[in-house]
Each structure stands twice: as structure tokens, then as C-alpha cells.
Image (cartoon, rainbow, N blue to C red; front, top):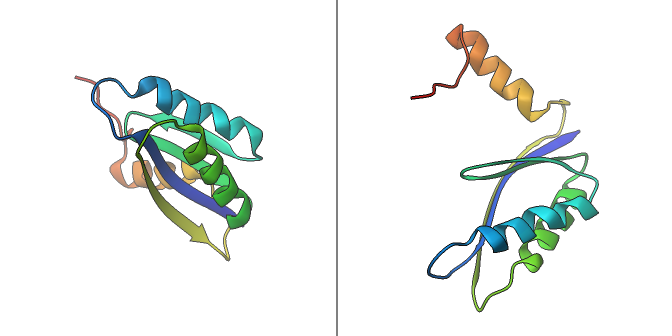
Length: 103
């Protein structure tokens, strides 16, 4: 089984949050997960929901501040082994092209 999630962790503060977001991303290294950060969050893949949730807790706890906001969206396919890139590939197959456009 593969659990895929979109995670966004940030302090609720004025100004740049990138330093604290970097702490959250760096915290994922302590867990047996794959991840890729994009402008809207970090996609995480884990073999089990338990490992995924442990990694999310580690990322959340790594951010300092009086208030921390965490958004988590989970896709837990319990009967199929699928990686995040396969989901993108399936959309691109229907499009007949890359699902990316630069301006």
C-alpha cells in the first residue's frame, strides 16, 4: 500500500515564512517517506498511514511560532500500490501532453 498526502505547514505570522517551512521540510528526513516540495505544499509518500502521520507530526512540530497552521490531504489507496507520479502520468495520458505550461 502507498499513502500519498499533500502537506502544508506554516507559522501564522507576517512576513516570509520560508525559513520555518524549510524546517518542516527538513524534519521529513527523519522518516521513511518520499517527498517533493512545490509552491503550494509538499507531496509525501509513505508505505503506511502510521509512518505518514508520524512524518506529518514531525514537520508540524519543527515549525516555531505562537501559532502554526497545518493542512493535510490524504489519499490512502488500500488495495492498489500507486505512486504520486503515476497519478500525474494518468492525467497527462488523457491530455496527450505534459500537464505543465510555462509562461
